[in-house]
Structures are given as structure tokens and as C-alpha cells.
Length: 113
Figure (cartoon, one colour):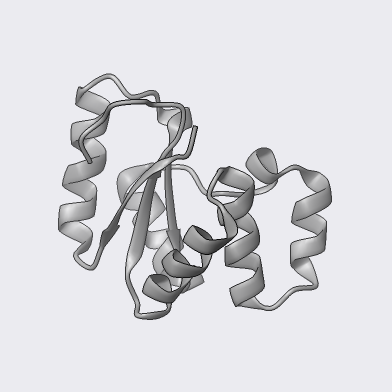
């Protein structure tokens, strides 16, 4: 099942969306935030207490490979590992390059982000 996602440019709206997902019963383990800017990514995750797409999700092997990749390749790799196909990963990476933040929900068939 491909993950559900929504792209945000406003951190307040992102935070509200994460709160709504939790109130709707979506487990924390299924909620992820991804941004191209590491500092922004950390701030957004701290504010929303959402997960990062790290070694726990991608596996240690992929996480180690990502250390030696450029930022764009790392983002695409993380998106592939979490369930997006290569084409969708590239489209989402382009949006992240514009400074937007991606909210991803896994393991849920019907949700409203």
C-alpha cells in the first residue's frame, strides 16, 4: 500500500494536521515528516513529535548507504523505502526542494490529511 501524503508550506497547518491525525486514532508510528532542510526537519518533528524516516524505517543497510549519497539521492531513497515508487519520489523531492515539508502517513487505507 502506497503511503498517503500531503505537502505543507506552513508549519502551523502541518502541526494541526498531525494533531488531527492523532485525534483520529492514527498511531504515532505511522506519522512521518520530511524536509530537505535538516534544521527545519528537526524543528518540525520536535514541534509535532512526528517520526523521521531514518534507519528504523529504511533499515541499517540503506541508512549507511545514504551517508555517502547527496541530499537529493538520500531523500529519494528514503521515499522509496517508505513505499513510494521512483516517479512519485522524484515528484515529491522536487516539492521539497522548494522548501516545503512532506507529511507522510503509512499503513492507513483511508485517511484525510
